[in-house]
Amino acid sequence: MLDYYDLVRTSTGINESLAKRLGFKSFFTEESDFHFAKNPGEANGNIMLYSSKNEGPGPYLKNGIRAIAPQDLDSVKEIQKYVKDMADYGTALLIDASLIEIAYGTYRSLLIGKISECTALMLKKDIRICLATLAKNSIEMLAAVQLIAVGEAIGLNEEEARKAVSANKNIITKTGGFHDKG
Amino acid sequence: MAFTIRDKKRYILFETTADIATEKEELERSLKQAVLSLAGQLGYYEISPKLISVVDKNHFIIRCRLSGYWKMLLASSLIKRLGNTELGIYTLKSSGTIKALLK
Image (cartoon, rainbow over all chains, first blue to last red; front, side):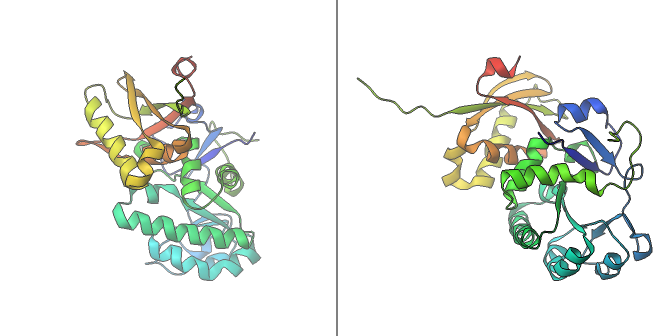
């Protein structure tokens, strides 16, 4: 049986008890366990939040970014151009489930559709897919099975979705606090 | 002899981040609306969500059809507001019977 991990942007209200109740082995929090690269110089071993308003992921990929998390509909479309580079550099695609959670109406529908296209392409090219809430608060957090359900909504089958939630551990640069160090 | 078709059901225990004890009707309406919005009128029957009970101020039980279990989980993760209150809904446990669910 796989162990599940989640990446979150807040440490408020996060503890081992909540992780266990929600079906995770552990949470990893920004700053203490992983970092978002703010410029290509910080890319090595970190995660890129890719927004269409910012520069493209090209320089980040060359500098060893570990995973790229698209942050809007346009960046989900754009990232498909970097599939070859992502495969060459071994970069993972990190799906930010909170984007889908907080989206509404047709925008959510388009987002789910575009992410589905994107994941299909990534799977075809053997690019690792990770799925996390990247929650900014307790409202955006989800249980492991709910994350798996989100995974199924974006075109993964159940096994792929389970692996994607489990794979979050592989993009963590360091661990600390109460988190599992195994 | 009468024949009936019995659908398999799934009971799911949810936890919320906000107090729901006084908002049972609003909770049921929000859940059904989320399912309808997600699955559409044709897909709603496949899930057939029903609020079974509010266990305490932060926990409640939903029943759905087994075939719509994953869609029910997805719909629950998309609910972020109950009336004027923002809240998160987490799935804690699921089972085929209420007895096993509350064990």
